[in-house]
Length: 80
View 1 (cartoon, one colour):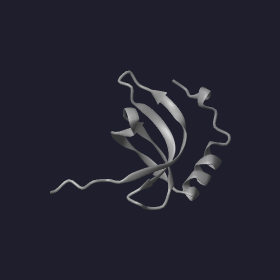
View 2: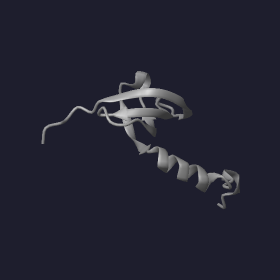
View 3: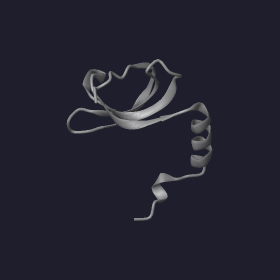
View 4: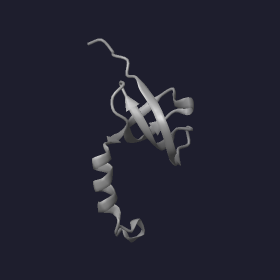
């Protein structure tokens, strides 16, 4: 199967969540994939955004639900 080029445009960077030892950043951005509708996107990016890892893109509706679900969540209460 021929490899297809995936087009992306980072419309607005929102921030870096973490950086790993190899220099890749886990970022949250507003991204358009293949000229589609812009979505909130969380994934790993290589230096200069030349390479991209697996991640997740969420619509505005999904972000609203996620915010509601996380409103009362305390990440420091996780049981180990």
